[in-house]
Image (cartoon, rainbow, N blue to C red; front, side, top):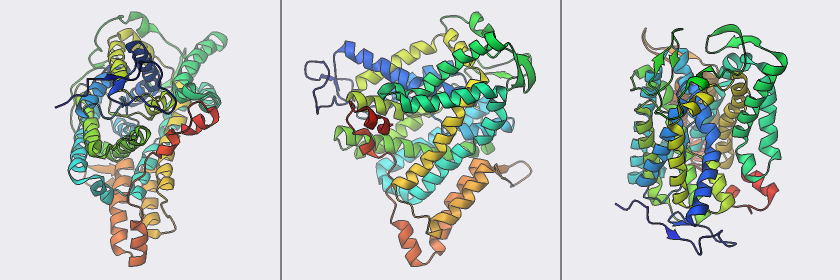
Length: 486
């Protein structure tokens, strides 16, 4: 099997000329390739360790395993689809529900592992039967609804966990992220989440020196405490070089995230399975966007890419790492530079692994103040939810048709309200899982019962458009259009 490791030098190895792109099997000079790899690291950096923090997993392990996952992905797609595999946001809602029900980190990663295996199977189905086989079961109206309910189900997590820890820092960081995402040009605008985290971290330190300690809800202690916003005790004691530590239980009974073997509970698996639908959407959209930008037919490798992400998630979660997905932030870097070389991604992956070998780095990230996460999660969770609306708009889903409107309306409300359905004394469906099941089954039931003219109208949108390729084709030198690309 070809592994896609033999890169041809593009031109003289310098910046591509106007109208040219550096294809996945090409590269620039190694010096420039290393520089591009560094850009990809910065682009994925913020979200890749923010989401493990939110899910109660190890950010140090997540960064390391994201590098491993990226290399595995590139090998499985034979170097034809350039991508960085960072931590997936689609699992955050399901993991939050698991944690709320007392689930351990081992049970969280066990559920994620099963979801990864299911995604790999879906990829094989796409490879054999084509993408339309999946879209027949999950048309755009259903996919958009599931993505939306995953995001909006997380609103109580912001309101009850992160925001109360430091409401003023959260408010300032929220506005800072909004301003930076729109006011900063090009690459800096794409990493606004990362910049917001750095800004919030520094602002918390300034508030500690200016206003002293804060008395508020402490998520770690699950109680109101008086403390400094920034606590670096664990950073000072951490080693500079070493593998991520094993998951342990602290003296207060709280789990300290590290590497561990997964554990499995069916009820928890069902809570994260809806994320598979979102991951199919993300991966297919990524492949379509890259195909358009490089003017290459990547449909034959689409199923392989979806399966590769599933396999990567199985590998990362088998040691306690985070779920993975292709990153739109890195598509932005490729669009701006016109360099789609997988060599740059191998460089980024190796650097990420090296970061993961520093416990000091992991402790620094884990010490991120809760108020900072409050401001960031307001934006991130809302963006996840609105991506569902984006899928509806791009596929022209008609909500004047009750086949689309009624089941989706019911499923979204059940999910956002975190409604429970007690199946047995030991098994309960709730929130995202219940909303997803109602949306999928309700849609297909409504479609079967509907009159022919309504059913035909619903069938008119079945080829899922997930990432509008034209949004990445604007002139990278035009700052105003560059912001639109994001």
